[in-house]
Length: 552
Image (cartoon, rainbow, N blue to C red; front, side, top):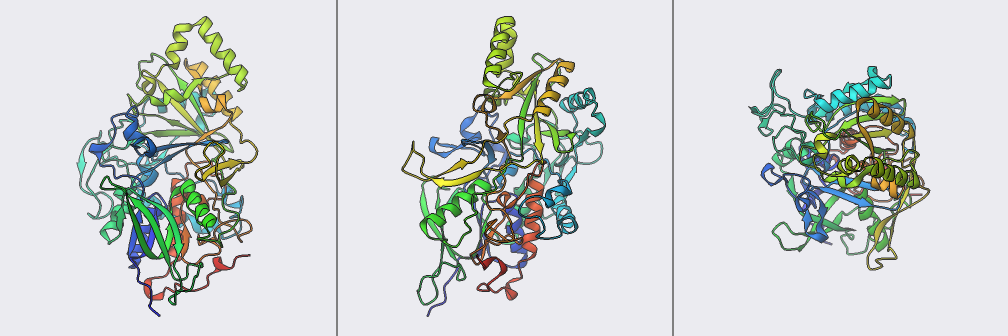
């Protein structure tokens, strides 16, 4: 019998907040680590000037668009997500918040550990690595949100957000160069934030603490290899040394991929001792569902695709056409307030000139119905046609608008399945099922209408919510959730896949409750915790039957 040879010890699929943490911590332990990422690297000089540059902003490879921002439309929800070396950190709004302790008592992860006791240390570690600090570039949009909160009698709950941004020394107005301020010289040189508002278009300044400037950067310094523009297509357990089939993964995995880093698509196969799925909620679900369909990973839990959540989000716009102030300045999400015990509202912005999101916005109907929307639109066109056309037009949208990102801890789930759609029966795709999700947060709409009227603004809604009654979310969670058994979830509390050896799930798909805040910090903190449980190489038993193998 010949012992198998391996190209790497741990192969990490994806380089977002789970994959980058895993890459660094495993490399620090002394493992050989390879990260495969389907997105591109994004040096500052390659970033798009605005989101009108669809080919460099949007991720639609079938159209030749290989940007860092993806938009997936399902029957129940529209999902916005990132796609790059550094995952969603390239385009996210750099808001890093700790959720309420209540979230650990909801969902399938409740009772799996003493979360309230153990998680603060992991949050603190992730905060240190991500350079979390209080926003020091409050701008006009933040002042306006504070005024709006005060109108509703909620001014005391308004606060500046905690963000992963480098602001420089006290009193620094922005734009100054600094040597690495975080990692004792091991990290890259930085420039302080100028408050340009460009966080979600990729930071040209070098102030945003994206993962390629911390976790992933340090992982590569410790020997981890990151292969960009490499899309994983299959995860196949390796056979026993005697050649007999073994789908358990105790002998490792062959990971098949397609790489086009040089402009030509080429197949790639790597043999790894263990695999870390960190492709984001949608990416991980798609990979694992395809592996189960093909019989590659037949022991995966049938709970895969269940308990998918949207963070109970709603996006509400407020526009002040012709306003003198520039609402695009500041950091992407600079402030927030608590609307009620379940609902957080944040002030979100794009940089001046990035007006393409206006194409997804429209007037808000009074009752949220399609008929109400048509009535509101017709009334506007009949009574104030020029003002209505001006309101709906994209010109100066970012300078004149603020997006209210409303998130709730209230529960609501859908199910994703791997199916051939009737309109394209040639390939399997993720398709959503279940009762409709709430597409409105009525109390948030009432607040927006009251506050906008008091400040001279006009409330706007997203087209998918109005026309199709489906919400938009930037935070798709769950689908491979933690649970006590494979009856209820896909991985155990150490994020090891039920039914498989040496297969970990380390991204937002494991989250088992709506957090009510931006989830990036929680994904990173959970990844810190999961990697803590992996022993060093000299103590590793690759074929050990761990807790997560005992499928029911």
